[in-house]
Image 1 (tube, rainbow, N blue to C red):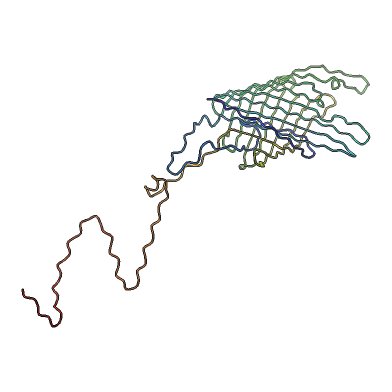
Image 2: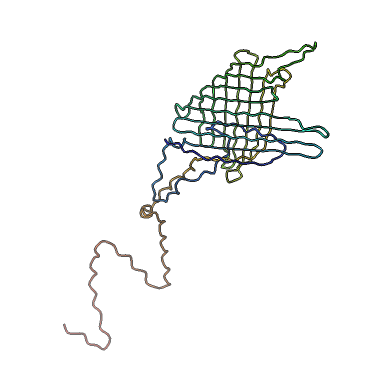
Length: 366
């Protein structure tokens, strides 16, 4: 089946006091984007028209694009500059699915009399491929690259093969799970490798490190109506090299459509590592408020066919039945209306009875 390529748009707004992280919704399915303003591919059929035949497989061939941005600028006694931008692209054609994501956050701040200093700096991108064995089951491969200055990472690479199964696959609700393997390769920042011990000595960690883990993921999306939806996911990573090391990642995005493809998104993300680099905290959280623009080429749902009507002529012509006028009321004492003629041949009328001649007139001779 031919793949329809869709257009990508950009939206930017300044919203207050937050740094954005867009939850990745796998979904194809799933993406985390709000319900799209799709245009109907055919007109609504009339009562006499045959409902359009839609290939069930083509319903799954959909391309979705979403971009979002947010930021804050403060001047005067306190200074703050924070910005974020993200993009999400997903497409499915036949038994193949491809997705790409990019996310960046940056922030600077300063107190009165001091210069600006960087307080947030991270960038992440990923590419994903799914091969669907059946509509609910697929094999996937994810490649992810990440830079995070304040987690002590110059670069982190993850390779994640696995299997995905959709337990719920409804138009408004999807629930799925993924299970697989995670390979991780870290290149650490030099300033994050040095640790001063209590006795004054300094410990320097290695520049690079690899890890092998079990990966489990659960995703959920639900559209409350045409304008509001929820997208959330929970990922768990358990190291094979060190049983005491595990990581937990959670993302949630609540989006409300404003119109013309725009939506307002409120999100929350949490990153937990029970064995971080020395001097780093185990938990990082991000709360967000941002403007999202999304586009999808999914066709609108067709209305159900009209119910059958009783009058056959009205059903065949497509016109509503013509109401019959009520009988006209007859005045008091007027003779009753004769019954309508029937198809049967009427019986001959009876012979007329003889009548008497008028007074003073002789009867006629026989």
